[in-house]
Amino acid sequence: MLHDLVQIVGWLVAICLGVVTLLLAFNRQTGLRLIQHRVEMLPQAMLVRYGALTLLAVIGSWLGTPVFLFAVLIAFSAIGFGDAFIYRRADLPFRLHLVVGGVALFGALLALIANS
Image (cartoon, rainbow, N blue to C red):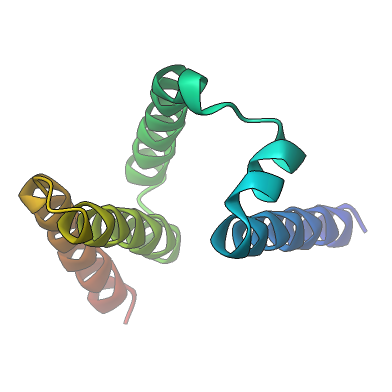
């Protein structure tokens, strides 16, 4: 029963995040207003995000569960490659993001192989 409730909450969070992602993709102003983010606060928000990503990586590595590590590293890879794409299109330095995305993808593939 509790497992089902946790899974439902997980799906609700995923759906809400997906809606916000679509809003930000198609109407940045409305999306930012909806989630109450301010562009001038981005450095502080990024600090919190990177801290949370670090915590997620530590927990995944500590648990050592290949499926969980695969999921975390695939998400990290998407972030790295996505940022690289954004910065490259703006003609800004992007190689560090590209390398991070590649390393995360490599780790995800290793986790997938380890799970087989």
